[in-house]
Amino acid sequence: MKKNKMELIFLGTSADPSMPVAFCECVHCKLARKKRKKNLRKRSSIMINSELLIDLGPDVQTAAFMHKCDLSNIKYILITHPHSDHFDVSQLIARQSDYGTEIKNKLKIIGSKRTIEIIKEIIRNKLPMADNSYEKLCDMLKIEFNKIENTQEINIGDYKVKAYVANHDRAVGSLLYKIMINNVSIFYGLDTSDFLDETWNELKNDYFDIVILDHTYGIGYKGKDHLSAESFVKHITRMRDYGIIDNKSRIIASHFSHQGIMEYQLLKKYAKKNNYEIAFDGMIIMIFQDRI
Figure 1: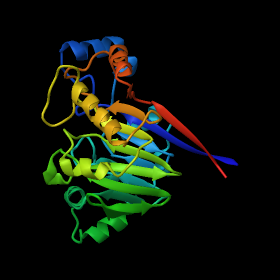
Figure 2: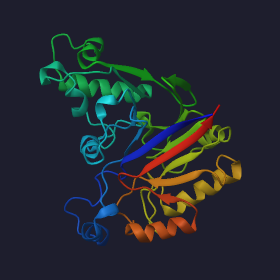
Figure 3: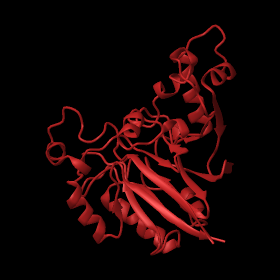
């Protein structure tokens, strides 16, 4: 027998524009500044096994410094959608030789067709050249684009990735993801409102060991573009009813805004009553599997 290990670290757990919000004097932001620690949150991103990143937001580099993560080892990036808090082009622009950058790994970037189109246009606008074809830009930055669409399943290295449509800015091709490795199945469902029927119908066929789900708004606050505390609970209850998760699954909330979000310890108590966990920046999940 040998043990396989999977490590997942939360590099950020906030919505845009981070938590606390700059210049905001609401009670939640004031309390976050006072309490600090797990109440201070950077824009959402996670790293899996030091080689797969989900979303490349503006705080990724700072988070990597803080949590001793080496971004030079990243081989794959899943992009949920190209909003600025989930995709920061400056991180890629710095890969060009003009910056004196030495690149070890060619970077594979995966997203919906529309998301990839938008990312390419952002890069091309930032790097105007006489020959600024996509092929030329990809070669310069040592990146490769891979498209994935709703319900599609693809292999990326040792990972199997499946996409689901998100109920969030459909015009940019927003996606939710299933990531599977060594028989461990992770659902990454940030930046979505109530799941669409087509998403529920597809999820019924799956099971997840770990669910990371949008929890942008707090208790008693209802928003149209993201989930709240109450809608989060409704979603995980429905997941249990469908058998998508069970008592062995870990359910983790992330992507928090200041709108109705309580201080961390109070929010943790609410979550515990409803059988889920509250993510915080730097939170690490380790999963060991015995394999023959």
